[in-house]
Image (cartoon, rainbow, N blue to C red; front, side):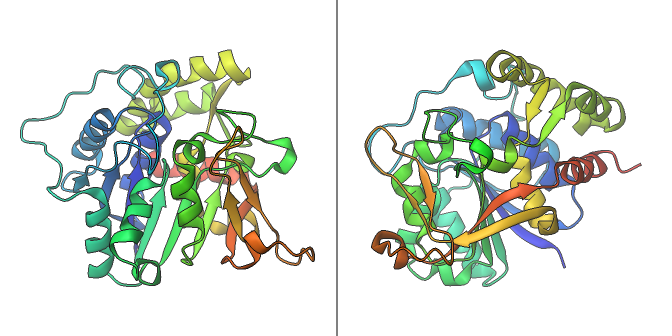
Length: 319
């Protein structure tokens, strides 16, 4: 049976790489893509989502989502990371007649989940504003979703901290209030954070192999990753790129490649550490009322990076 997926995303180079992964993998049925602000403004991320689906997942609907967080303003996009167009400056052009669904992303999520109760996985790889709004629209939503897989956060495993502040990962920082709401909603939720994504690197040689053997999708991944790799070399000294959003897809397909830890998670919503994610691991004896009344979340603490990279490569280069 295929995994039914709604992909909530702010494309974004790594978001696009994950969408290609979802579109090509035979075990995933992509029910829809919902856009959100984040790596670029909502107009750009929605345009990019439409472009990506038209090219790699034709017929999959795209619904435009939130332009900013539940409180405050959207963060200023950083073209040095994802380019002026959000896709590494490849200058994507939409085909004629390519338009978003008439429904807002939150409504699309509610309607689609209710049409497939107990079957839909939400893969959320941007700020989680759309999910929080969907919970507000339909209080029973959490009981109808199969699971939620989030790319975001950092829990200090192996010394990994934030990537936009010393305390916060970008998606959590983008809408900390929404993230804290989503992590407390009571649905089955898995958090794939920087603790594992920064252990998984697509090297230049790996990306070149995708280019040379992965057909059009492989060449596309190579093209958009050129700008991204320049950023990684300059900022992190990485000879390649971190694999962020595609790891959320990999968890859906192969959870056995990950080690996890359970326990409630809180997200700090204000102050200089806004967006910081903190888990109280199950079995920790210290009373913590702000955590103890909350449902457990599953946090990824380790990953078989070689296995994940092989899975991505097999999906794009099946021969």
